[in-house]
Length: 175
Image (cartoon, rainbow, N blue to C red; front, side):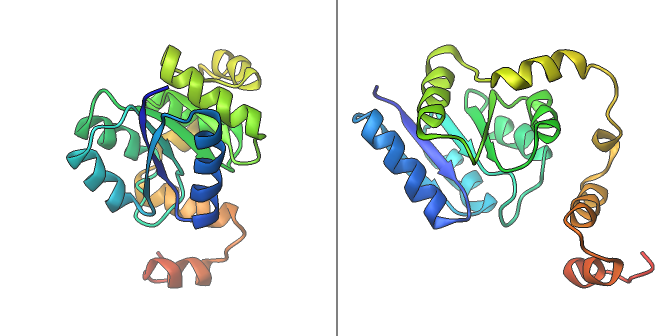
C-alpha cells in the first residue's frame, strides 16, 4: 500500500503507537504527524495526504466544525476520526463529512482494518455505528450548539463546575 497519511493527536504515545501498527502492516505507507490543530491545517495546505487520522480533542480544535474546515482546505482528504468519545459524538462528525470513526481503545487489527478500508473503499463505520446512524435521523440537540456552547457542554460533561469552566475559558462565572 503506497499511501501518505497524517496522524493528528496531541499525545506522542498515541501517534507513535498508531504509526508502529500501521508501518508494520503496510510497509509502503508514508506517515506524518501533527500534534495540534494548527499543525494539521498547515500540513494539509503544504502536503498531499490521502488520509487524516484525527483526534477530535487536541489543542486548538474546533470540534465538529473542523471537518468542514479541513475539507475546505483539501476537499479530497479522507478523515478517520480517532477518539475515545462514544458513538453519539462519532455520528456528529460523520454527519459533518468524516469518512469514519475509530475508538482509541480499538485493537491493532481494528486499526489496520479501518485504515485499509478508508483508503480502499472511502469510508469505515464500525458495525455498532451503522445501526445508530440509521436510527439517529432525528435532530440531536447537541448539534444545535455553537462552538463555545459545545465547549462548555463538553467541560460540564467531563465533570467541571462553573468556577473551573470560567477559569479554563477565561470568562466570568455568571456567563
